[in-house]
Image (cartoon, rainbow, N blue to C red; front, top):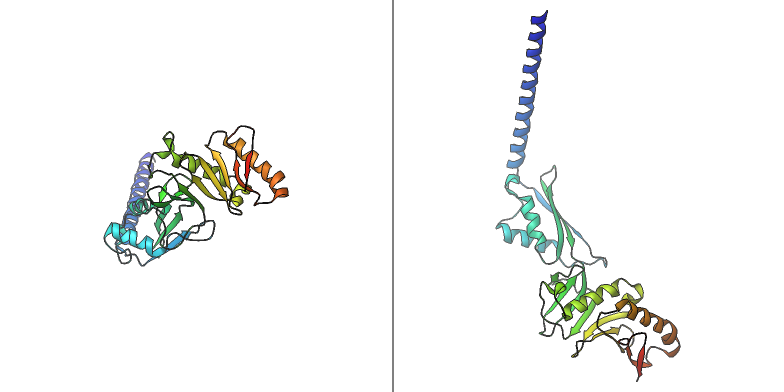
Length: 260
């Protein structure tokens, strides 16, 4: 009885090992066959900006991939397509925030792209123009579309990747003010341009009217914005949008206006 049980146990183990080996062979064969299959197509999914627009198109994505890899995707063996590298290459492109590359059951390569969202267009003192996104990353202007965003002009230095940690940097001041404007629905609808004058003073230019709103710097910015909004709600509604040439918020607890 004991011998029969031992024999049955051995047969069971042999059968289990054989089954495991067979499954492993099948999996390896399927993977090898899958890797030898060739990409049949490429599908691009590019997420639109909040405005519904696109700074980059599918042909731009294709050009980036082909320039980096030296060949087309369609027709290439799937085993030779490095999806992780493809994602890294795309995420290094100026308009792309994130990329997801994968292959479906039909050997179709999918590239899902999320665009960087520009928040301001910079025109610096050297005449260079570019966008900044919400992280402060520099983006070149698009060949396809001009983003409807705030514009910053004046005494703005050339872009420095470390500008967010630099002291007394006008580009940093512009960026901080831009983010504050976009956090406030009233200001987002009111302000069309940010300007830095020769005294390194921050100014804002409304979409309606041509007066200058003088902030000075970004210190006590929340208080300055509160005073500005209060002034617009109480005074501008009575006096009209063209009454004043400048609205000065530099002085603590004051709104100093100059008439035309």
